[in-house]
Image 1 (cartoon, rainbow, N blue to C red):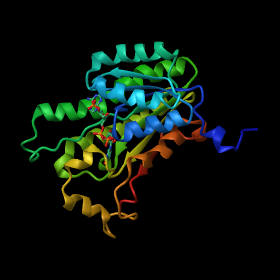
Image 2: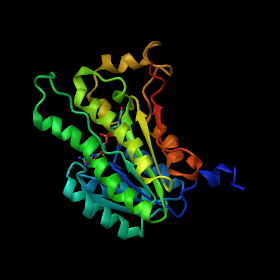
Image 3: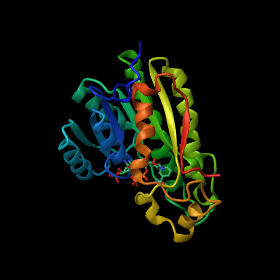
Image 4: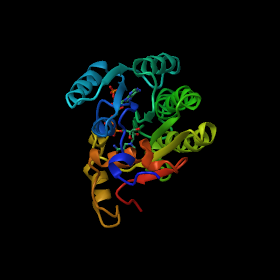
Length: 256
Ligand SMILES: NC(=O)c1ccc[n+]([C@@H]2O[C@H](COP(=O)([O-])OP(=O)(O)OC[C@H]3O[C@@H](n4cnc5c(N)ncnc54)[C@H](OP(=O)(O)O)[C@@H]3O)[C@@H](O)[C@H]2O)c1
């Protein structure tokens, strides 16, 4: 009989998680939360120093943490990344495609091809390639869990960030496709984040922030603290979600 003890169901003891964009924001909070649940980690983002700093802080709690520099929009660099990460710990049990960015163009017609390609590259192309590389190896081996960090923008597209919304909607689509491709041993799920107070939020005007804090703006009338993403990610990463795949959960303070 399966244990109902949450300390067992949500445990990541003996597991290894690769978190892209794990150096700050939501990714860093998930890294800290996974380490607290017993996981070893690979933290990957563009700036190696930032990954090293995060790795040092988390390793002080007892977890093994490997920092790696990567640009997730660079297709060819993702195979060496997954090889290196796989070899370092003898496998990966959890992949979190979290690295993302949402630069805003002055208008749709002023959106450059370069910006469009960059947004699609980081938010969709990279997660596709990494999920294929790591998911296929998980399927051949001991299985695993893939978590895609999407955005409520995917289902509530705003004109100022249309390419981002399209990329995240695409991420939702491949979440379901990969769940079918690599199931039953690999589970693939997504989290659509709402407005969280990370570095991304520093670019928002007070007016934009206030829009979320009114009665009609969101049920909880506030922005999310970065650590409030962790429980949902831990659910998908662990055996607690053993009968959940292809699901996309909103963690957004109750946007209308
Ligand atoms: N915060 C929100 O309100 C919100 C809302 C909806 C969805 N999301 C999604 O949540 C995820 C995390 O967002 P966040 O708010 O935590 O962002 P953040 O604070 O800006 O952190 C982004 C992380 O991704 C890394 N990163 C950025 N571009 C990268 C690239 N090309 N290759 C590898 N790593 C890269 C950054 O490190 P480096 O700079 O070192 O590369 C950093 O670790 C994103 O996918 C975002 O779209 C956030």
